[in-house]
Image (cartoon, rainbow over all chains, first blue to last red; front, side, top):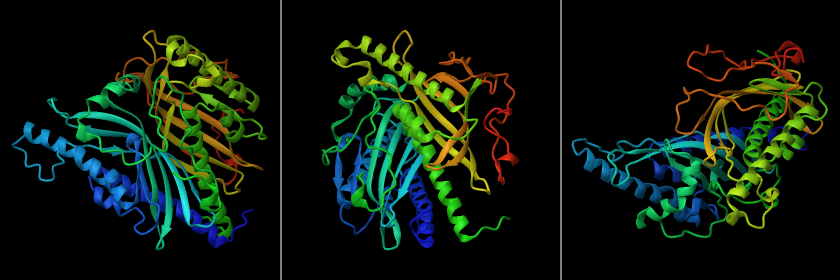
Length: 236
Length: 235
């Protein structure tokens, strides 16, 4: 039997579903290229907001989150747009997003809401696809990108918001190629990326283990466990 | 429509969330190749008639299920040894135990849940689709990635330590090398250890396969005696 009163327990149950919905919104905004709107799902006036993706390091504050969530993807798809306009100049392409198909499927959730209802933690694994027009190609390429989301949430003004946001791609391979081949080619791929594709390091990499044929799987970051207050648990 | 007290409703939704977390953890422990935690933390300890079903048979009883996971671990150690043998320079000084799970990516992306908690709160049933992958190490050219999709049906039982897996059936629809059409022949490897009960539960996809909705989708129920089992019918 829980030590919490019933209203508290109900609020924790509702929190799980609100958080699922929040991540769903995040996903659909990403798919639609609404990167600025994605920022609105982050805590707006709570200290300690962070955003981290792959090898780019942990960015601090909302300004840092903007670099990870907004600027990276805008830059990425500017190149796509340029190639699309070259290839099909007759297309209107009003939004610049013609030919983009980015889909994410959030699966295998583990969500823990703190007893004090002030924070929550969630982890998802997501098979996703992405579409990009690489310079030199004739048409855009489809990519399989499977990744882990590790997110801390905080209650702000009566709403759940993203507090620490960490994306950890396991692999990114062109459709038809296996992630084993991708792993072996990863170093070459990073070397071949144009310099402006790689933003300057945003901060230290707190944890990142891409799939490697030479490495065992890493439990870092690990799924959340039940906890009472945030100072008793780890941070994503 | 069932009428529950507020306390009962709260308990039912807490159970729902706890079970979703259990299944999410199962997915992540599979990814980590952590068979010890799967055995110790996720599977039942006391419930009679536990079973783990695959396409071609069942392991029945918790002792047999634990032997299966021990065999999985032994297989992972063997794969680690193969990797160590192929890449002396990378793994010099490391034992196979140190690198267990090396190069694996056993992903079970569990989606599309249908989860029912029994009215008596003693059991629950859930069905998920999985779109997953893994890596096979035995290919002559080295590791190769495999797409594996199917469904998992799980009966859960409430024990003193919380909700646990009681019966599980993993029905794989196809297992095809990455980049290859799943219409190509799907062939399962031999089971790691002999089944307690050999049974053709589910056919791998082939172009003339007759579709069957297996495992069955759960519906609301009162007690376990009123519903079907994700274990063998006579278990």
